[in-house]
Length: 223
Ligand code: CDP
Image (cartoon, rainbow, N blue to C red; front, side, top):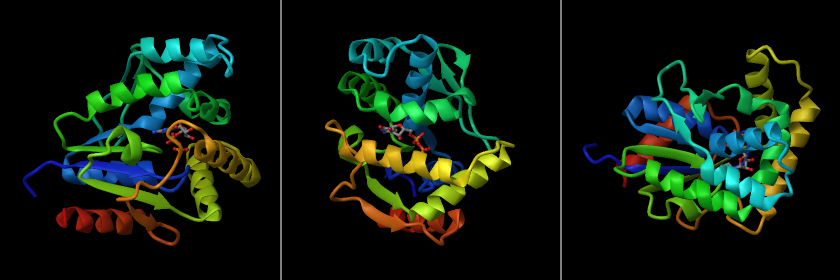
């Protein structure tokens, strides 16, 4: 395919968005933009600076002033920089997991990050994943995918991922975090987690990443 597309991938936590998006980006030589990492980076900054999760103005200021960037993706992953500091691992802790949905509810934070995300998606050849990419950030995307999977599958995937990194975590702790985040993300007033009307839903329960990637490449050929 000659034309470089803009692809939006949304869905709940642990549905396989980032793994799928990274595989696709490497296969197609597209850029990958992880918008969840951006909300996580602001959450980290708030926790480090003792900004309360209820202080909407304080959180908005952090998001407006923060400089967030990603190094190009390789088979070894990519690095997330926050104000020139490598925060790739620091944004994946349980503390950030437990607070990020409160930061992501704040309209001012979303406004600041959405404009950075739109800038990053200019020129096409981009795969962006998140919760509101097809609905709000890139409503004109060439292809919109909404990934889901059963809660059991999503919990098990997240557990395997953390255990691979050597972390000791309980199945139920992860399940509770995914359920809580999904509920806050889906019920918030601004840009809730929702399938865009023109998004194609893929239930990845029982599918391998390779199968999901193949399905999306097939869908791209129909664009
Ligand atoms: O990887 P995982 O599915 O656990 O989550 P993530 O994509 O890193 O996103 C972390 C959190 O950021 C979500 O639970 C949302 O609260 C928020 N988020 C959002 O509100 N909008 C986005 N476009 C991306 C993430």
